[in-house]
Length: 485
View 1: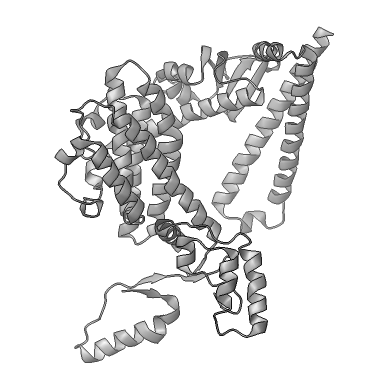
View 2 (view 1 turned 90 degrees about the vertical axis):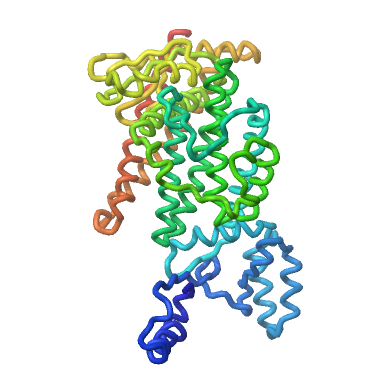
């Protein structure tokens, strides 16, 4: 049985007592799933007099502010309360409610179930979920464009494809298969434990962060290569990500997933040979036993290290206004023995790192055995044990090339960069001061959850590293400017 907390005593308990009396001590239901009460974003109970009642059809189809005001005139509210409701509507929905669709509303409400007693429904969260639907749609727009050009006899079996267990797969392919397996496990466990929000959270993270933001970008590089074996493997795994995403999302978002599934099936005739199901609704849900062997935490840890290096390299380029296409000599400075090990990611995947960061040259140095003068380097810290470096003179050379193309002189480049670094340094110092005040408040250790304290400690370390890095870069700029004068 599915019901709410507010009628647990008024109806559910009475039904159980009556069944116990009239049905020879047999309970009417063994499991009761309790949903939370839906309230407005401020936690107030929905009331016509407050003007905070959210009509599901308005969220699904969209409604203007004027139409919401007009609807108040057709209620039995007193004129005074109509005025109050109108003012509340103008405050809460100044632009009305955009059309979000049934799937977005359903998915958002399921995500809210982690709030056990009440759901403080904020329309902006439903709108954000509609963006997730768009993300899924754009994934298929990209994927189908690549898959339609695949070989006619390519194996698009997402369940028992021998390719998935191959040792010849690239790190990116093994990473996304591991993430896919982990997502299937979390979704299955979420359903079995009636914690549906865990399933929706795992699904959203997989589609948005793992597939769209990460794997799609890596796949573009693989699909552009002449290596036919890697290209075909990437296509098959891309299809598996798309297919599994639809199957996992279908219970929460039946309409958009059915539309995409039918479109994928009509675009890829090979799929008809694998299934006779007329609808995604009757297709099998991904089974843990078919995918659990693909989950590899070591592969995920290695890939996350490489991904952090790529992000740091792009951040370093962006901070110095250097395009991604310009090759730079990078050095990785590390003090973590596990990362420096021969079986660690820095040694195993050096070629992949060099390729993705667009490095003309790539070195790895042990920070414990090296007395490198960091004043001559522009750096970006990833954590307290890992950072990437580029010689400051190479950064300036790249900037001078850009300046020459724009007709700007060296001193302008140095002054602009100095102003930017000082602005960043002031912000970091301000953030450090605020964080220290928060962490030194009386009762902080007793009142703050452990996970929050860990995040604050980690942020404190990163802010101190960033402050140190910025101060070194400002000092290097001063030395270069003095040399030139």
